[in-house]
Image 1 (cartoon, one colour):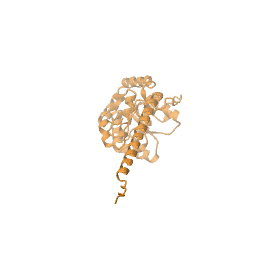
Image 2 (tube, rainbow, N blue to C red):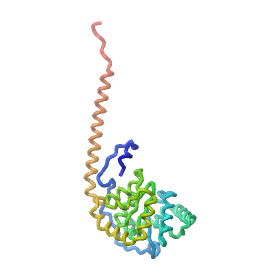
Image 3 (cartoon, one colour):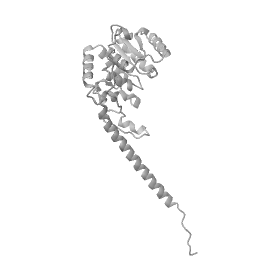
Image 4 (cartoon, rainbow, N blue to C red):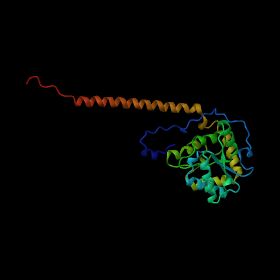
Length: 259
């Protein structure tokens, strides 16, 4: 997840794992409930963009990008988490000020995890926040079969979703600039056939891709823990040796008894 050129900027020792860094439980239940759009407060027609990240992750630049997408996709709506009432009011007010009807922002109330996963199926495309993007929320979307779009940044918090998409063979959904991300979002929203193919592929791959192979994940992370422990032990032995050597060098010499 962390690009090798960025390692020089971290004091921590970096441990790389194959395929992805995030562990996922492949036994998570998805409710059998078939939610209707009306039951979730969504319009009966139109493309549904969503992002169930915490509201505090929605920066002004991220929100501005989302509004540009809504303007280019007629009849589309943005489905967000009802994380904080005041935040929702501010977002709707800002949307109106930028020429997007406040009614096109719809807020989802919290519900049980199985039901929350099930309602993902009503959405069409999961958008990302920057610089801190979706972590567990992106895994939730992918596990539920919802396509995720991601712009990859240089910080760790900006690269999580890219790591997840790579681990489920969705590298084509990773963009390198916000402009590319917006362009791809509009392209997918206006090309139902391409998006439908992507959802079908995701549904067939999610149980065999490394991202949700919980058992496989345990092996490399256990190996990494063992290597960390061995390195720590070597460092402790080396520190003990150096300490003894330094004490020996500074030990007072006995007086010459022949004087």
